Image (cartoon, rainbow, N blue to C red):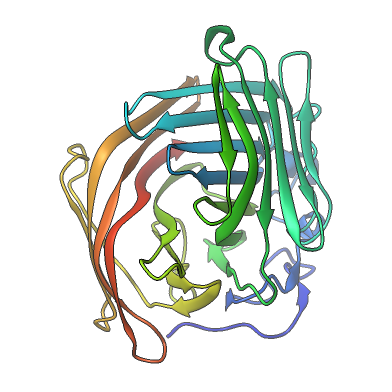
Length: 344
C-alpha cells in the first residue's frame, strides 16, 4: 500500500498540509516551510519547525558523525566518534539559543549548511558530483581536537530514500536518506590521523525537515557497507514518528539503487538494548538479526525539553531479496539501530 511519488511540486499546500504523501527515489518536492500552518499565531510557528543535516561516515577503524540542526527554539551542533577496536566513544555538542548562526538550505539538492563560532566550525558543502563535510573543533574531548575534510561521492544515477508523511492534521515530516556514499579525504582525532579511501569508507546523510508532536517516539536503523564482491549495500529502516500508511522509509540500497520494502517492525527489548534485534518484513524479503556491541546513550534535560536516545552499534546478519528476486546474503554488516524518545 506504499505510494510512490513521481511529480515535482511544493511540499505544502497553501493550507499547510502536505501536497503529496508518499515516497520517492529522488527528492522531488520544494521544501516551502513558509507555508506551514499549525498555530493560529503564525509568528510562533518557527519555534516548532525542525531542520537538520546529519552526516555519518564508517571507516575500517571508526565511526564519525557531525550534525547541524535547528530545532526552532535552539540550534544543536554535535560531533561524535567511536573506535571500533577499543569501543571508546566521545561526543560533544553545543546548544545555540534561537539557532543564532545556524545556516541550513531550503532543499537537500542546493545550498550549504554551516555553523561557526569561536569554538567550532562545521561546513557541509554541496557540489555537482559530491558532498563535502568539513569540521574543525580544536577543543573537542578536553582539547584532544577533531578535524575532518571528507568528500562523499555521489555516483551518477544514485537513488535515495525520500518520504513525506503527515503527523496528525497539520504536522508533517519530509526526509531524505542517502546511504553508501564513497568517502575520501582525511580525519584527525587527537594524534590519530586517518586517510579515507572510497574503496573502504562509506558515508550517509539524514536530511530532515518537519513539525512533530511535542511528545515523539521513533526507531531508526541504518547501515552502509560492502559485500564480498565489492558491491555497496545499504540499509534504512524506520518507524514510530507519523502516519506510515502511504509511505515508509524502509529500503535496501544496492549499488545506490533503492529496493523498497513495506512495513518492517522493530523487534527488540526496550530497556535491554544489548539483546539482539530482529527485522522481518511482511513479504518475506528481509530477515535480519542485529547484534549490538556498543550502546551510545545521549540524554538531554532542559526543563520542558527532554531527549533520550539509545543508538546501538552492531552487526547485521541475514538475507534480503532485491526487486528482481535476487537474494543477498548479509554477513556482519556494520551499522546501528536506535530508539529515541523526545519532548521537544
